[in-house]
Image (cartoon, rainbow, N blue to C red; front, side):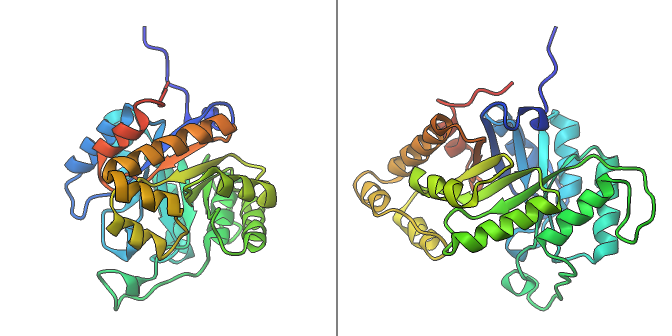
Length: 289
């Protein structure tokens, strides 16, 4: 007899959780997404599905999340942004997602349209990530934003954080606002050393489980792109210069192991579509059940 798999909500804060980020399809065929989710399922407790990342058109993550959960029984954290929807549409889609069985929502502001493949599109942004978290929390309490009584939803509310933010005091203030709005766990931008994590923990003092981002840097060219938006240790550059791609994988492997040893809630992997790299990083450390 197969025992039921513990839910993400049951694991958070009780065991080391592993998640990985996937992108939904560019068209209407979910086959590749389902194949990637099936490959990741061996190693992770849940997968994230992004919401038109970098403002490039992709399938809605709420439907993609349902397809993955229905086909594989693998839990999904659906990204949900404020970019494309007013407050009516935000609530409407959330109610539909709940009806489809989606229970984990990562509340994000979203990339601006001018960054993506429809640069002339108009961004909505009636609320930000804090406002969206408040909307989800209100639906959980059985109220629409307008105060109308509804059947309560049961969403876990995830939020984003940046341990490498230039001003961690400001990041702490923003993080506190997200918790006050109803956040129940967080996932972060990539970290490349445990010192960054410890500094974030000391200053922000998160009161909810935090899954720290891990990004395998596979080349010096990739490192230069990443350095434009987050600090990367010089030691990692030297390792890449000496050992190439294997150094980036080994570095990510070590970060996951250090996060586990440090007693944090878990790690969130950014495989960037390369599931072989995900397996190389997580095979030695993943225990999913």
